[in-house]
Amino acid sequence: MTHAAITGWGKCLPPAILTNADLATFLATDDEWITTRTGMKERRISHVPGIELAIVAAERAIACAGLTGADIDLIIYGSCSNDETVPNSASAVQQRIGATRAAAFDVNTACTSFMYGLSIGTSMVRTGVACNVVVIGVELISQYMDWDNRNVAVLFGDGAAAVVLQPTENAEGVLAEKLQCYADSRQILRVRGMGTMYANHGVPFGQTRWDFDGQEIFRKAVQGMSEASLDVLQRTGTKVEDLALVVPHQANLRIIEAVARKAGVPMDKVFLTVQKYGNMSSATTPVALVEAVEEGHVPAGGLVLMPAFGGGLTLSSHLIRWGARTKPLQPCTVELPPCTQTALEIVNDIRAQKRIGEETVERFATLSFAEQRGG
Image (cartoon, rainbow, N blue to C red; front, top):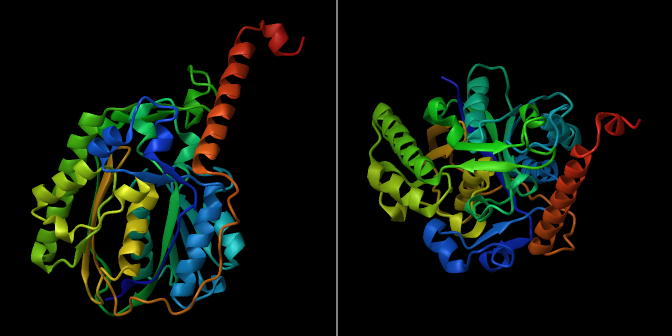
């Protein structure tokens, strides 16, 4: 049986750090309020488009696998904050890395986009449709954030990570997964303004309004991730003590702790990045995985459990066996362009642009139909 081993890995985090103290300069909050409710201290804010983050992460993963862009025959771009819809974002990565033979497509299941992409890429390797696959999780949430909404503005950050999948006869990569969706609750996490249906329904173009039922999201996330994880463990005959590490979606420290309790996983087996990066949506879990490998927490041949949850409400859990290698085969010198602003300056620029957009729409709405048409 052919499996899809993870042979390359790389991440890209913008250098600009937005602290809880920064958020307190324009929101009614403070470090204690944010930390006690979320476990978050910092998050990254990007000075470049999401595609640029994805390209750097992909280049690092490809070099890690000892490949070049020309070797890649499939690119899967997981995101819910795409820079472009037409053409797709994956094609921009393909162009820049020189993957001239590759297929390229986007996947959007919100925070689980990378995990769903990992399942798709694994299946295509197993069936022989593709050989060298890059799966990317990337988000630029800062551009879509409602920065006046304290309930969501403190939670999210920007980032990207990628892995390379290649065929192997060894039982490596994804051994089992559970994918599911609580569609009857999809309205409890909704970003109004991301989509054409909002154009004439009270949300100015380029603006967002977030529906975020924190308590219900907490309940569904804990239920979904813990049940999916137990299902995967049971189907593979894996015990918690067999796991080298659990790398969960980092939406909130309280959610992670509750999932661990319900799944019977001790917290010393859970890898955390929530305090440093917050919730980067689809980039969160792969960034944590890459960081865990880089820091030596994933041993050769180790079993890693990766539960995730996102808008939709989508959920997943993957049981992965790591390969024999934990170090890159080649170095990578690709870097982001320098950032000349602080994270707070970038955010304040975004807030100012959104205010201008809202004022423009409000003024336009007061004009007569003839005036709007230029008559």
